Image (cartoon, rainbow, N blue to C red; front, side, top):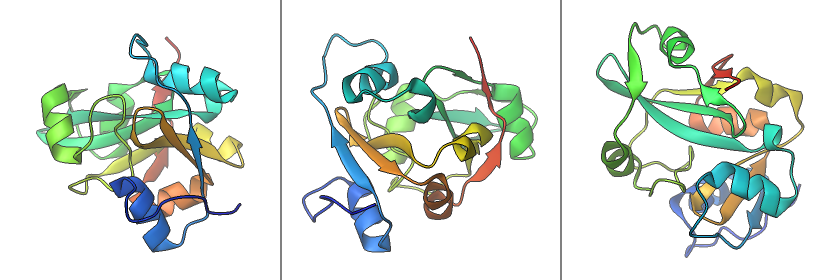
Length: 165
């Protein structure tokens, strides 16, 4: 997979990918400001099955922020996320806290290039695909890369943390 884009004027995510030399493809699409599900919007606009497009969510697990990355057509199982990091209680983080901690805006939070490093868990279903897509750091920009590359760059653990709605 060839690298495309990611120059110095990119997002922190694209700069981190380029700096690490990780093969990836930038996938852009016109973001609709009326969209209520950014991940499903990306899947549809890019013509990719939703199971390959992953959303980045932040949860508070026992007082610490943890990143959960799950397919856009699923929900984050908070109990499973807490268990994956050895925690007891988990709740979704407040949007403002997630934005401050990551340096990204909601709907464009990338698991890559965050302002602060957080424990990260990628849903185990990612391994079912040759490549997955995650936010590239802004609405209308996704990054396609191998799941193992995403794990390596984010130091993620793999665990079954997604559940069907």
